[in-house]
Image (cartoon, rainbow, N blue to C red; front, top):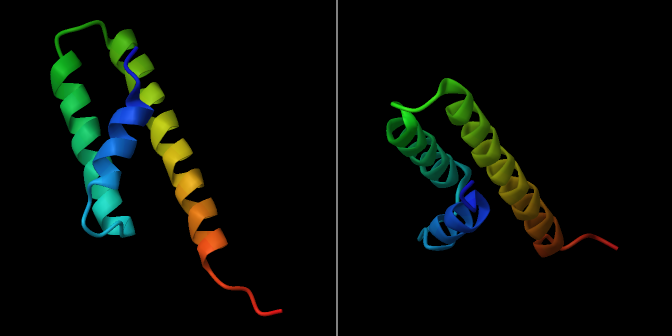
Length: 76
């Protein structure tokens, strides 16, 4: 199993603008590349790898949400 988190995090960190749309484009490209790379393999392997990729994307999004929350000044 690949380290999808590191791959996706690196790609997102290189984006000039880290908007939701830009991040989603990276995620869609990663999903497409994975499907193309594993299309000739056992469907169970593809499903397992897709789940690992989606887990990495969810983790990255949670971290992004936390960073945004910390960056926003709170009235107080």
